[in-house]
Image 1 (spheres, rainbow, N blue to C red):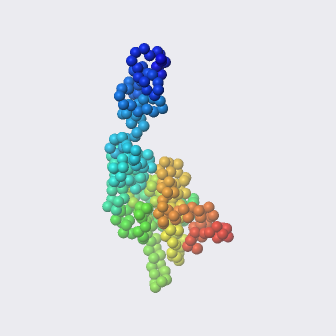
Image 2: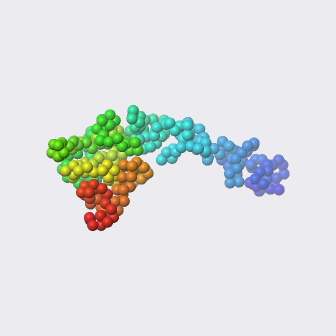
Image 3: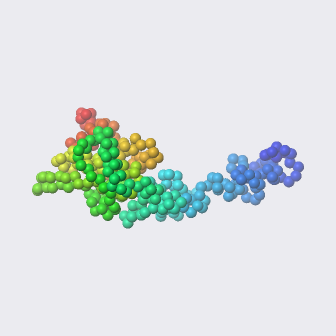
Length: 313
């Protein structure tokens, strides 16, 4: 009779396990390599101390540091946590669970928007940086075929109250209000006699890549404003869908993990305005190049059918 581990003869006390025979000193935990006595867990023909097995194969909760049960939650970044911590907020910018061990905390606003401390470290918070990024993103928009030329698009940072007080609609359940393009229209009766683009507002302290994403979205609204002098109403789903599409196209050019995350969030969004609008815009982009697609929308106030696109471009 020979030991399964060392193949030497067994002449004294031994352990019988897994239909095999082991010297007591050879029957060791596959994790810590110390002898196993009492209860153990079998994995791939090897014994494991319960504690060693949990450490190796059962992750700890990132919040309380205790081993997770069979049911747990996980954010996009792989942070796993107990279901009992589901009340913890997720960062509006990066979606990480906001807690000390993961993000070092964060700030939650009265309307529910939460920005974690990982994101605020790279947050855009100065007028000088805002203006630099505004010039860069106007250039990006131009490279996509939507040129603002000399049109004025002032950009500044804003807090939650100012953003909400200037919002033109309340469709922000699945798409948090982080930026606004503001303009005014003057009517005499039903006739438009004046239109003025005022400014773009963006949530303060957004991380730079997220700030750029929100900014190019709002600059696309500005492009529609300046190229729609008669002020004909474009359906909200159509215009927002195109603006999200422009975000998406820019993010595809970025090779960061954050950009991949933001693209994934756009692709998964089920919001009837922003999510469904994006999906329709993406399909329309397969029919027309972006500049032609936007011109079609200005003229027809809807996405093109395949037949309409064929005869348009």
